[in-house]
Length: 396
Image 1: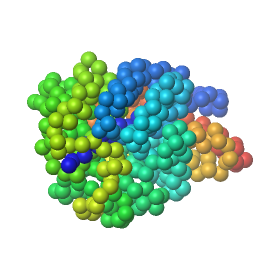
Image 2 (image 1 turned 120 degrees about the vertical axis):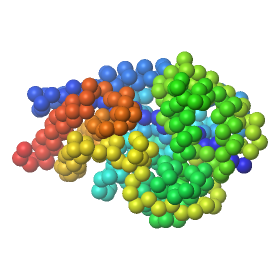
Image 3 (image 1 turned 90 degrees about the horizontal axis):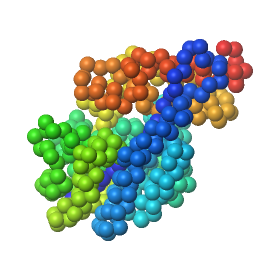
Image 4 (image 1 turned 45 degrees about the horizontal axis):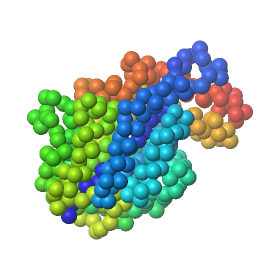
């Protein structure tokens, strides 16, 4: 029996408003609160509400159907202000007992690249948020954009997680299939669940591509592909906004989702599972990944956030400001700094030669170009540094 493991990721960053050099010391917020909530409400209408309602309906209709969610802290913060009914829908889903929850960094940040204790603190903040919101203690961990390495596996094992999600990238699998359970060389008690990126991307990226040889993709066709894929499980990990936002409703994506459980049911060799359920069972082999692998961009490395001098400069400056913030006891400084660590800010600064990667970065960015993203970010960070220095009593 091969388990179908659908894992949907919910995230919205706190986007920066325009913060000019002349705004330093003005006391203005770095984040455009009204604009962020406006964006959230728009996506809620297009994606969150209709998809959550369909998923709840599928759970009501079938005792076999189940899936998993990862929900960032910044998403829940905005949902509570912009669309509290979305939080209630999420609670209803988790309350069925057939929706798994996945832990990650609260701010969907690059904390995994910082010295301790930032990563530990962000993961614990997120776990506590999930406990308070959903009364669940997640046992599976994912890093921002499925970042994975040997050292991150050790971290996950040390924090008591039983499983971790990773990109099923050939460079670390060495010819093995991503559809089997593995464990890390550095963390033998931690089960690795790999994303099957071709099948995941057939839905997330290619579904509405009319020049795709498999267009149109029907639930019956996709279920047949699943049934012909051997393994313990098939990891379909993607952004929640795939349904209704990245793939608009008029593409038929919601109908595809609605009919998928019935299509899967026609294949007796397939079943549904949450991430925790899929992690049960012995690993097939070990996986070694001395460097970080992610699901972002063609190279699946850190280039999406740290691939050019703009990004590296911004991240190095953020680390330095963080050391000052940690000397203070001002919760507003800590919150602003951690919101500035959110990976999206560095994602907007991408400058690369790969046209397809560049299009994806531009799709998500609210800036006309990466240089404006960098300048705006650095102005906000400079102001945060001034505030941190004032709080510690040090000269500017």
